[in-house]
Structures are given as structure tokens and as C-alpha cells.
Amino acid sequence: MGRSFENRKASIFKTAGQKSKLYSKYGKQLYVAAKNGVADIDANPTLRLLVEKAKRDQVPSHVIEKAIEKAKGAGGEDFVAARYEGFGPGGCSVIIDCLTDNNHRTISDVRNCFTKTSSKLGAPGSVAHLFDYMAVLSFKGSNQDEVLEAMLGAEVDVDDVESKDGQITLFAPAAEFYKAKQALQDAYPGLELDVQEITFLPQSNTEISGDDLPMFEKFMNLLNDCDDVQDIYHNAILPG
Image 1 (cartoon, rainbow, N blue to C red):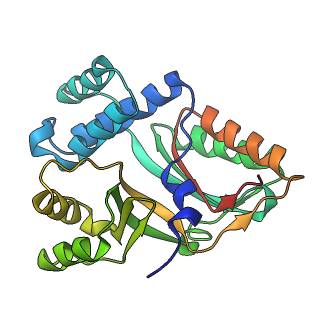
Image 2 (spheres, rainbow, N blue to C red; image 1 turned 180 degrees about the vertical axis):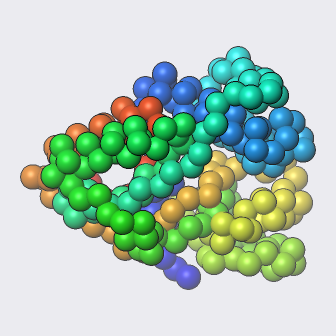
């Protein structure tokens, strides 16, 4: 308890690329969620969460609908999840989640991002143990004890509840995400969540020096330019 939300918010509010990249990212994620589950928002919690997230990121309705409709058809693309880990500029830890229909292309593209910035691509598990895989729910409020009481009443396993600057942030194991969200909605009807994520939160941070900053920014830009890259998590704290 008591870990600072300020030290972790960079991992929650992840970088999104240009609009075309953003639409492509959500198109793949929505397609996979609908294809692997049910192409019905009401019956597929994962798909419903993605649709809500896409709308918050101002993804047009036609992009969302097209991806879901595509998943209803027979055949289609066969995307699989791929995760890469390593050490970026300044020694920061990085996790990269991808969706790909060609593993050879994806690993080549990601490896090039590391090579071009003198970074090091690691083996599976080399970095993940330095992060906590957590559900994060944040909303306007100030009574963290009341929130904790609501979670306990709903038998939600809570890691932490923090209150700062009129904002409540709840941290729970990833498996508790939907249960925690429902408990909040039951306790506070009409509640609007500013953040609702399942994400990797760093256990500690690495400060990037001014000298390393240009290479770090290049590294992030290269990764965001890769079509198969969906999410980037890191523990870097940037100067200034």
C-alpha cells in the first residue's frame, strides 16, 4: 500500500501513435476479441471494454463496427499475440505486446527497433518479473476508505486504493478487473471511470538522462511505427 500513483501513471496513459496507427491497433484488437469470443458487445466483456476504450480514444464508430462485422464472417485473418521484452535506452525495462499474422516479420521489426537504438532485446521473462500485471480503475472522488469498504463487501481482492487531488485510484490483480468494476458501479451508480485498464505497472523506475532522451524517443517512435505493435510498457521516467 501507499505506492505513488505519480510514479506509475506513465505506464497507464500509454503512448498512442498517429490516427491511422490507432485505428489499425483497435481494429486488430476488436477483431481478435470478437473472433475469439462472441461478436456481441453485451455478451463479451472483453469486447465491450475495448469498444469503450476505443470510443474514449475517439476511434470512429465505423472503424469499430467494421472490425466486429469482419469477425462475424467465416475464415478471416489469424492473429496471435506475441510479447517481447528487453532493455531500452538508458537501461529502462520495456514490454512490447503485439498482434501478428507473421511471427517472423514481427520479431524482425521489433529487433530492428532495439538494434537501431543500441538497446537489448531480452529473452521471455527477462523483464516481466519487474512489473506487476494489474487492474487499474480511477475516478473522481476522495473517500478511499468508502471505496475499500465497497470492495471488501463485494469480496474483491484489492492491492491498493489511493486518493490524491480529488482522484481515487484502485489497484487490483488483473483477474479481479471485471469484479472490481462491477462493485464500483454497484456502489456508485452512474460512475464515470477516467481510467479502466489492465496493464503492466513497474515495481521501480529508471530515470532517463538528458543524453539518453533523444535515443529513447527514437526507440518509442520506431516501435509505434511497427504495424504489429499494440501496447508498449516501460519504467522510464523522462527528464523535465
